[in-house]
View 1: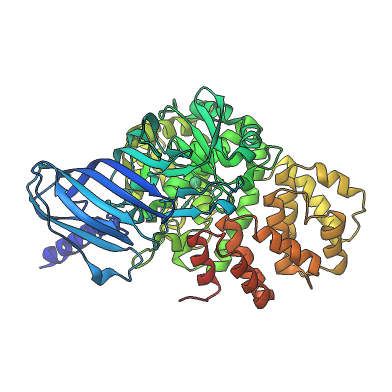
View 2: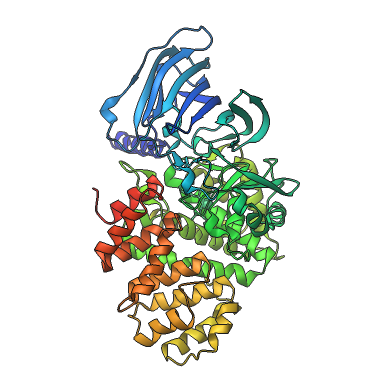
Length: 635
Ligand code: BES
Ligand code: ZN
């Protein structure tokens, strides 16, 4: 009897683990049949702001089945054809899910047996409800003459661009054609192959041979110029920004080489960069062979070019080795933060990397307090059942993730008697082992433990027993241990912060401050933020009028300043509010807009709402959705 009870429990645990390792953010039946290759043509219609598409999808069946289920959202499906027989296949869009944030499953009726190879062709179009594409009218571009469009598929928006198994668990090569009206240029996250002149339009073909998850499928089109800045890097941008961008990101090749030294050779051939219009909702997006970057990061002095170090790093963690499901997002972002800071460490110095980690840890703490320490979204494995993966988007996967990897590095390296960088060896092997595939938390942990057992046969038990996996990875709240990022730079700033609070900083300091590098300015403002005290008139005036923080600084410094005065300023003068509104009309990055609007709204509902409405057509649809959720304007 007892034996049966125990085996019953074991079976339950087993089943539970299986459900955990399934991506719950897709309707597709990818455990039964998998897409192995996609060839798609996107015909871009700027006048109607839709795309007409034709997609050939190759599948391999893993077991017997009668239906192929794909993800869609807000798409029109016109026909599905079995490309081997030419036969029209029956399909339904399962409307009962219409209101689900995951979209509507497309069910294609086709019987298959294990190991069958099936190829289907789907004709479809996008609709005005699709948020995967941001359509910009000519007035919204720098050139003001031609329209512009770009896709953003991460996290689960690819299903709003084409019918697909929209899950990171399945990876495939893609071959993409984009048809655009002349003289626009069509770009894709792949390697350029050829083009066909169709008269009024041109079709550009690109290939991505390395298997990618659907969220990395990328297209963009606009009146773009190109500057080649190294053998493998081209910068694309509108004419007005392309030279500035080429200067700003001119260290790209150095960054790639530094991270190649830490890991292994870059495998994607080209590393190109597309500078988007300012409504782009992210700082950067690691689209393969075509990193997207926000123009807000063109500071003029390369001070924010680490965004490129971050996106380059994804070429290994995220793009070669991909998280298996959205609850394991930290395996993408935490590892990428780690690699990014390896670049900073080697390009600048170790203390600078620590300072960078310290600055971000402040934002991470703010996020944990904002969610509440017991909330699942503060865990490295957030609970996403019934949720859109973006709901959990915050600094947790980035910074808690980074801190865990950093902790593991110190633990491992401090155990090597010869002082070797054993963790670097681990990183290389891990990335080699899982490249072209996916990895979930259990696989990562397993692989790590095996590596430790092999590397330190006599001490492995002792080392592994020190790692509190549960509290680092599964439990919500702060990690069991805080890494020490003390560095030569921040120590200097602490003294200045003290003088600031004693109100003893003199006007001459403004000149010194001006010459500080960005991270120093940020840590200065963060420290004041960490104090959590209302600013006195002197303090407010010092920041605003002596340091002159409303103008002439880069976007990160301005953002920190605005957050600070919104949270802790006694009253905000009209001038400052105008500067804030101006900022909100120039930068579309979600990481700035969400926190600023939340604080702005708390202070001045009317003005915050008026500003949101004023810029509604400028912001990306995803950003508007989350601001409205934050302000509880929608449920
Ligand atoms: N992959 C992310 C952007 C992203 C995350 C898009 C989740 C959609 C859903 C990208 O690599 C990233 O982390 N961008 C950062 C910039 C970076 C320098 C930390 C961003 O946009 O804030
Ligand atoms: Zn990232």
